[in-house]
Structure formats: C-alpha cells, structure tokens
Amino acid sequence: GVIALSAFALLFIKRNRQQQPTLQQQQYRTKLNNISKIKYDENKHQNLLNVLKDKYNVTDWTKIGFQRHNNPTTDFRAFGLLAPYSLIESQAFKQLKYFKTYRSFELPYALTYINIGYQYLTKLNDDKFLAKHPFSTDENVIKDFSRYVDTELIEFEKFWLKTKPENIMSFNQVFKQYWKKYK
Image: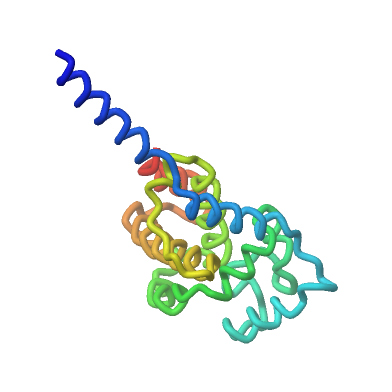
C-alpha cells in the first residue's frame, strides 16, 4: 500500500510540475505582455509604419487587411506595439498570397494576423498553456512569437477555406470555432 501510494504521489507531483511554466517561459510571456502594453504613438513610432509600408509595398493599407486605407494604427489598439513589430517579423504573407485568389473566401491578412496574435498572447497568460508552449531560447521573443502566429495563420486560412463561410461577416464565428482546439 505504501509503495503504491508513493508511486501515485510521484506521478501526481510530476504531472503537476509539467503544468507549471519554467522561469524562462514566464520571462518570455512577461516580455511579450510588456511590448503589447506599449501604445502606438505616431510621434515616436512612425518608423514602424515606414518599415511595414516598405515590407508589404503598401499604398493602401486595406489591401493587406487593415480597416482604414490611410492609417492602420487604430488596428493596433488592443495589441500595442506587438502588432507592428510582429507583422514586421512575419514571413507568412508571401505564403498566403496564393490563397487570395479565392475571392469569396479572402481574409484580411493584417486583421487576421493581429487577431491570432492577440488570441495567442491571451492563451500564454494561462500557465498550463504556457508550460506546454515550445519556444525558442532565442533572445528575440518577437521573432519567435511571429513564427508561431505565422504557423497559426496558415492553419487558420486552411480552416477558413475548408469551412467555406458565406462571407467575411462569418469571421468571428469561424475564428471561435478554430480556437476551440485549445480549450
């Protein structure tokens, strides 16, 4: 009886430890949260828009999925500077251009990216999710974060096309359905 109880206790302790994030994982989360809390300031951060404009060859911001054609900064509200920084690091846009040919199922790239990034950051605030999160020990947390969001964006686009929504107004419903996999 005592030996079986000890083995059970060890298994319980081992499982419980696995659900606790490491110090490195906690620092990763803290860095991302801190960046997301910095609000976009046109006077201080205009250079970020210039980099985005050059990277995506933008003359009209709506062409890559922002809400306003002349200024995308209102789309950064909930995500702070993590939005433009991670969009700068993102490599997914090149891969997604092919899918833009499905006109009736076209997704607004930037807004979808920001929504996925925001959802992912929210999930990282759950210790169980964070403990399972494989991340690079690379010092560049934004680059690592962007790689994950890129992967999720590509998977979400496949899911979007597979669900064949009527139009973009179905976005929230399809998005919630997609994220159920993490519950």
